[in-house]
Image: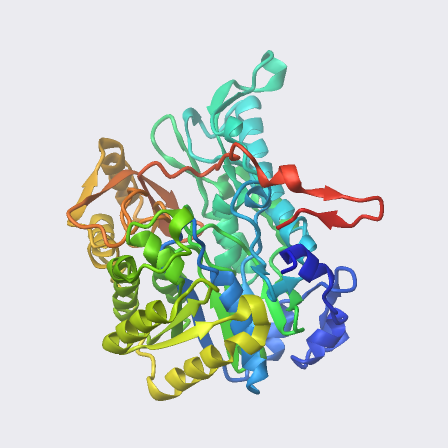
Length: 556
């Protein structure tokens, strides 16, 4: 089989204006970025405000394993399959971060014959959104450091600066740095940190803002530091908001692209779900609901991260009501959860599958707690045997959920028709009764303990002294009634990445708590999760090249 990039480069893309016509969007409502990409102005949403919303479908997955699950691939394939069965559908995805592209994770444009194109553009610079976000964040950092240099009128304590610089690249050397060295003219020396752009609060703000005014309000609410006498300092106090918003005026507009089968796709915003809230932008999702009868979106990593945050943060903030949840798994990954080594996953092992299926069971139960019906999508591999498939089918029957064996990687939309039909049937027969898991009026510990017990299945939560102090400060600011966003390993339901399946008898440890007042949530840091990833021993960058004609190779 051809590589992902070879398949993508052989695609017969339509000019983006023709893709837009499928959504009844004229050229006057397109801002072109070349022949195959365009931004959609926020004014388009106003034109469609009286049109009824379509059905919202969330695609999530079991906890990721080295065997792979293919959540984005299934999302893209489901969108293509919807068109195959005569449904009007659109996909709403996150933009990839360049860091993982050159690291180990790979891109975020799908795979095989279920991809979004132009793949190289999407995985690299795309329309410049990531650069705009990086620039806006770092402008605020520069203004803060300049304030210190120019007399520090606000009395900011350099030891209590919360704001971090960011870069859209995996670079562990920047996790902890010292700035302002080299004499008085170069600024006030202090310790500083970098995070990856997608983990920044500015990214979260862009993804949750409804328009430019809301964006500016949220940017202004960013808590950046404390003064010597313990008073909070916000971005608005540094007079940075207008300039930051100017850098983001185009980045806030959703991007329109297409799949290999020319299905319309919105790609906008890209926070990681293990260190941020893991969902694409509110503007893209809500626009997608106006443009099509079905809007298919995804949430990052497993359902314990991306889906929980989608359902408890994004849906709550944006007033969204998902009609159906598609839970992606592979037989290979479930066998890995059952204790099989990666090298042995190709061999039939029914007993390991039966042992590892508890991970899938837990995620199904968790999603049902939100009142939303679930369909299981098994991303099929050639090594899956009839006996293993029968185990999955019997299990799903006992759980009362439909299951579909999808082959979208190899067959595109054609391989997802069964899934599309079962999703539509589930929406028609099982009305959603969506509701969040917890009430935001609860205290921060009460909200964290609810998530830990109900979603992670922990026995409880313990807090470090630093976490307790941070929660007390947030409460003193009157910001403790916000949703919580847990930064946690994606590889396990617990905060220990080595605990597979359904861990039991563990306690979640919260080591720090941070206020993202602009985004509108509180971040709880658990385990060893880092906000600036590093590159592996053999980065994917080693295999990437470009020829004399500008043709990129080695990109998956």
